[in-house]
Structure formats: C-alpha cells, structure tokens
Image 1 (tube, one colour):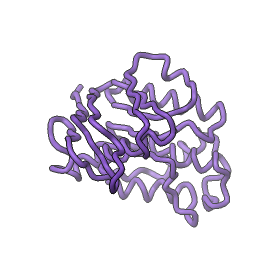
Image 2 (cartoon, rainbow, N blue to C red; image 1 turned 180 degrees about the vertical axis):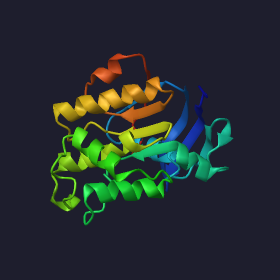
Image 3 (tube, rainbow, N blue to C red; image 1 turned 90 degrees about the vertical axis):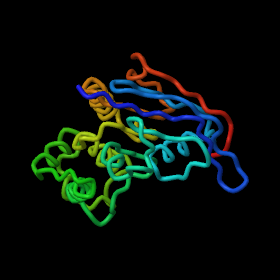
Image 4 (cartoon, rainbow, N blue to C red; image 1 turned 30 degrees about the vertical axis):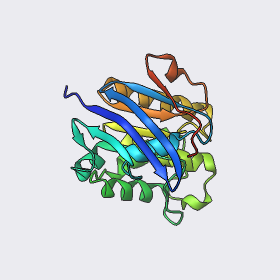
Length: 212
C-alpha cells in the first residue's frame, strides 16, 4: 500500500490585522485520524480551509507527500475531499444530478446506478430525483456526505460532518470513515459531538482562541 503524508509546519494565517492561526505544526500519515478541537472562533474552519488550499498561508507550509500543495495544486486537489459547513449543493438540481456533477468536476465520473444505490443506502430512497431545495437539512447533509462513498480521495477534511444527522446516518458515516482509514486514507475532522469513531486511536490538535 502506498503511504501518504500531510505535513503542516509553522503555519501562520492572518486576515487583515487579525491573527487566525499561529505556529501550527502536525503531520498525518496513511490510516491516521486527527480530531481538531477548540472553541467556536478558535480557527478550526480556517485551518481546514487553509489545508484545502482555499485560504492563503501567511507563513509556514502545507505539504502533501513532501511537496508544497501550491507546487502541484491539481494533483493535490484530486487527492483531497473537503466538506465544510455548506453542503455545496445546487438547489435546482436533484440529489443524483448534484453528485454526478461533483464527480465529473473532480475527474471521477461515476455510474448513475452507483449514485442511486448510495443514496438509497443513506436513507434517501424516494428522494433521489427531487430538487434538493425541497429536502430537509438532514437530507441535504446526507446528499453531501454521499460524496465520501463515491470519491476515491485519500485525504478527507470534514468540518462538523455529523451535524443534522439521525442515528442511522451517523453510524453509517462512522463506518465509512473507519473503512477509509483501514484502506490507507487520512482523516482530519472537527466535531462537537461525542462519537464512537473518536474512541479509536487518534491524534488530537487543540487550537487557541484566535478568531476564525
């Protein structure tokens, strides 16, 4: 199995005069899980978005397999999947259309039957072809999370992935996360919820009180 490595070194991020992150250091390798902790406004979302390449680095580096993520951004983007607070769905498209479109954008086109099967497994049977604007928040979240089942990305960056989920969906997400790690993936997540996933061996990084 090919081993991958995410290395964050002396990372500083600022927005205007506000210091958002200061001297953040950690590394994660294949099969490893990190729980990112901190109060609201401590910089958790800022850190995830920076690692995802969505926010600039003031100083320090984010490296993937020994290379700065800005040196080969396209290759890095294909290796990661970032899921933030926003579900990233187009309201006028249904669940199947949203997932197929996102897979094509990522360069990972999927068969439509695989999309339907995944949505059904996530408890969305009968809602696959309804415009997502008519779905509940929990249903929208499950559509967004279906990307994890369909993606081949190695690095998962998940910001509060368990929010708005019922117990069945929560357990399914934990199952797919364990499978991802078992298959050599890397997972960095934030959550305020106490979930069984965090009872297994994992790293913890606690951020301070900078504003995110």
